[in-house]
Structures are given as structure tokens and as C-alpha cells.
Length: 276
Image 1 (tube, rainbow, N blue to C red):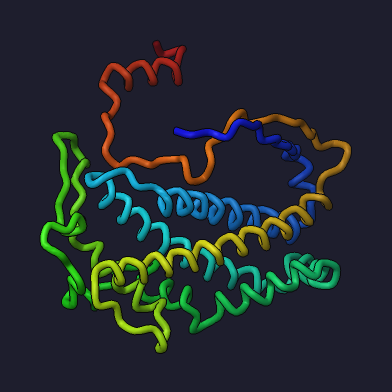
Image 2: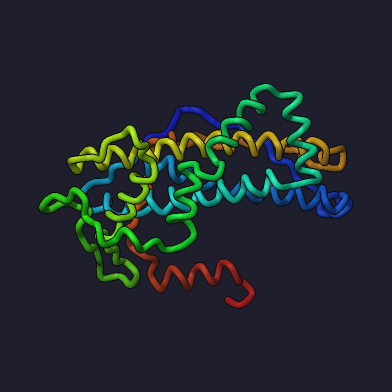
């Protein structure tokens, strides 16, 4: 694994529980809600960045395709529903958004971009209501659109370990549904498997771009709220992450050797030393 020869500075702000409880109810709820939306989509975005770049070979790639599709459909649903929460708020979040729209031109541009990308009828809204958060079944009678003999997507993988089984066949109609929702009327239907996969990657890149804008937008709202809360009674410390890996140098594997029973027993002892 390649790492960058640098350290990343990290600022940790520890807010006393009593400080949070002393806030007016609507401010406390807004702060926790925005923090939840931000943390959730940020994790999904970073995972999507990793699986969008990795190529682990013929055996792991079907698993990567599954994770890529799972993350893409999930993050679309999270962004669309999160945007509804932010946009429908009539109290504290609305005040913060209004303040930033007046004082930050870049935030205003991000707001307009997201309002377009996440509105009803957008590509992301279509994924959210066609695939995200539920099982879509209507396109399974149309696959595979451009399968090739021996194609790695048309496979079932399994090992001797419980749970290590992955049917990759059903990912094909999911890929096709995502690509079809993304294509505009001006884009022709793909005629080969290579064109079909390129169409899918194009949709993945668009979701990645929107998720980055969404994270930046939420970060500004959350930091504005944080500044209003942080005072002398909040502890601020500074740390660093040594040589973090580049986003395109990390790897996520599906197949792995599970912990042994001895490992589980040792973990129990470490977590519960008194019960040794």
C-alpha cells in the first residue's frame, strides 16, 4: 500500500455534555442532525472514492463491483433525503443557511448546484426512488445487456468460510439500471460491454462529484454551528495522522481469513479483563 510522505494535522474539539445540554432545544437538535448527515455521507463518499479506483484482480473485482453499486445507490438516497431535511427546516438550520448564503458566494454557488443535482426529477432522485433503499425488480428480465463469454461479472464466488459467498450475476441488471437512469436522451444506448461499463463509470463519477459538493456544503453549516457553541469551556487539542494513504492507494477486500476462535477469546479478555 502506497502512502503519502506527509502527516495530516487533526484538530479535536471536545464539547462537554453539559454544554450541549445547555443549548436551546432547536439548536441542539440541529447541531446533532447536521453532524449525523455530514458524518454519514462523508464515510460513504470516501468508501466510494476507494472502490471507484481500485483494481484487485479477476477474483476480487466482482466483489468490488457489488460494493461500488451498493455505495452508489446508498449515497444517492442519503444525499437526496438529507437535502430534504436541510431544505425543509424552518428554524435554526434555515438561519445558518440564510447567513451563509449572504456572506459566502462559494456557498451560494454550491447551494444552487446541489438544488439542481438533488431536485425532483434529477438523476440522483431517480436512483433514490428506483433502486436506493428498496429492491428494484423490474429490470431483471432484461439482463444481461452486453455479456461476454467468461465475463467475470457472470459468476458465483465462494470459499469454505461461512458467509464468504457472492453471486455476481445479479449485479448486471443493477449496473444497467444505474446507467440507464444516468443517460440522457442524447446519449446512444451502448452496443458493447466496454461501452456499457463506461456508461456506468460515468454515472459513478457524477455521483462522486455531487457527493463531494454535498459534503463541503454540510461542512460549512456544521462548522458555523460549531463556532457558536465552542467557547472557553471546550477543550481543543491538536493531533496528527502519520503518513495517511492516498485515496487511490487504499484497498478494500471481500475475501479474507476470518479471526480464529483463539482470536475471539483473546479479544473478549481484552474487552472484559475482570471476567478473564
